[in-house]
Length: 271
Image (cartoon, rainbow, N blue to C red; front, side, top):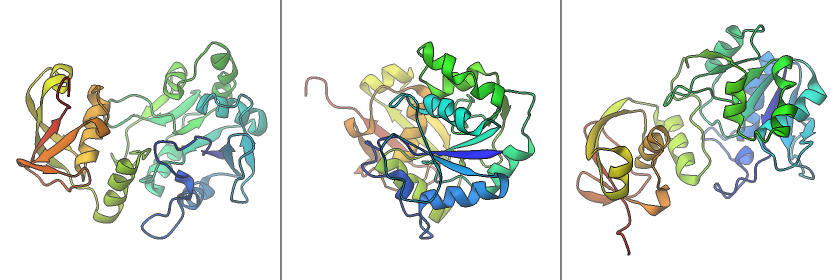
């Protein structure tokens, strides 16, 4: 089996190359992912957009259809690798050996893919997945049909779905706030907690309630909003909101404690 690390995105929301970010232990994120994949894979490839300088010695796979996203990366990888392929997103800062071992141990070659369920909505997670050749070969037709979403493509393969041995292992980081959340989890560990959440205005309308008690693995206020925003498809991005904890305005990187009351405050209409 080969592996491919997806690093072809523009990292616009992060503002810097995610693969080059240094982890708390001083290891570059790309090198961390390579070290995880090496015990399981014959060769590790790096997926990059055409013309990008790789910054490492890994063999590079360039998309055959530049700008078409992860499904195009799968199409290009199938043309190069042929066999089963472990695909990892470069933004998986919490991925560990235990999680990959579980994926390898429970791979189902008779399915077109083997992957994990997302811990928040239970849907297939495409960026830590083993794609079988008969699944990869369908990427070209999917692209021809206008399919660009990696999750929807994976779901179309009817993959074998696994539960995560560590629930937070596939939490990713595409923004500075999400990166801070991941780094806090790496340094301080993950402790389940229950907090109260109050919703106002458009968030109340979207959620359909004023308040709720939430069980969360988030360390920070930003991490909590990411969980809720993803799970309930909340309509506002973090940069459009203010946050208060226990009655005081706070920053997004503020640490949460069990029993806290958190308020996400939308902009005033017309303001």
